[in-house]
Image (spheres, rainbow, N blue to C red):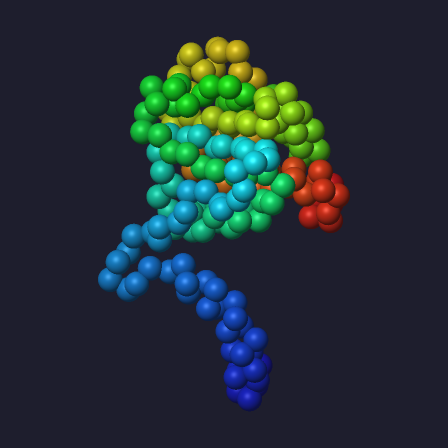
Length: 183
């Protein structure tokens, strides 16, 4: 690239760079930016909660999770963090799908059908439950809620949150008929 082309390249990248810089913490503070836990949306309509043990600590994971929460428009997507397994058990009420490595594997289209069927059966409210780093409490794993596996590979609970948020967005786009899902 010639030296004369650099200013043009910088002008093209400037809008994207400024969007990224808005979420970067100031220099001395090395902690992750505080992001909203839920996307602003009307109180009516389908609501999906991702309930998990522990907060997302990595800034890049928080940014990616916030991006998918912002993109989802068909449902209200909310992330709830709890401290321990006892609080997780208390949150697993009503229509609920538990994420576990022993759960059912499904394609994105099957997940979309399952998501919207569960929302219809559960009164437009659905929770996905993700255990801590040590897994789920036995009461949840052996309980009445269906088990779902995101992959045959093991994921950290923080990555599982992000993969699940992307799959919820993809499910909404499949339902909408957009070109996001090409499979």
